[in-house]
Image 1 (spheres, rainbow, N blue to C red):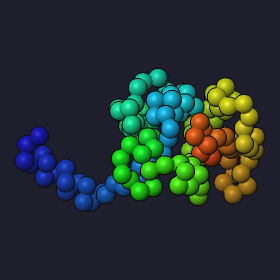
Image 2 (image 1 turned 30 degrees about the vertical axis):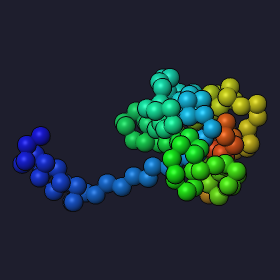
Image 3 (image 1 turned 180 degrees about the vertical axis):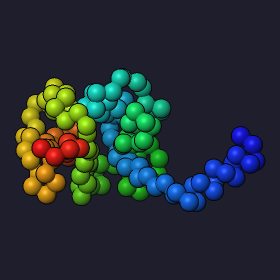
Image 4 (image 1 turned 120 degrees about the vertical axis):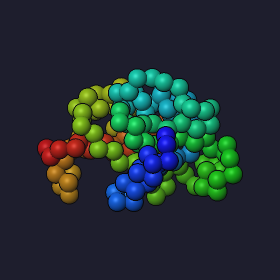
Amino acid sequence: MGTVAVADTYAKLRRNPVKRTWTIIGVADVGGSFKWYQSLFGQPETPPAHSYFGDIRDSDGTVLLCLHEWGAHEHPSLRSPRDAPPGNGLLLFFRVDDFDATLHRARALVARLEEEPHVNTNTGTNEFSLRDPDGYYVTISALSSA
């Protein structure tokens, strides 16, 4: 990329700044959790980038969730699940455009849902909740109203 193209890119970013949150959770088995979330979201099975870290991305490349092995680095909040229960104070909330298909996949992943499908009176959308392999509370919500 030439100097002019780089300058043009930076100028566009200053006019239209982009902000993204990368939610990173501590997990016991990055590969297993990676496969679990790919199954939940109906994504093809691929390996994580590293044995200690992987990011689940949407079809447009947007990071949906990062999985980090407990204790792999010295991040204070990712040292050990013994320091605090996984998910304490955290709700993983995903909006999906294929609610019924996601519900079907979720039922295949867990013995029971934490919350059966219902209409959230605040958002007017269908949602359900389940626990991931590390015990995190995951809520799936439809993009459009019920």
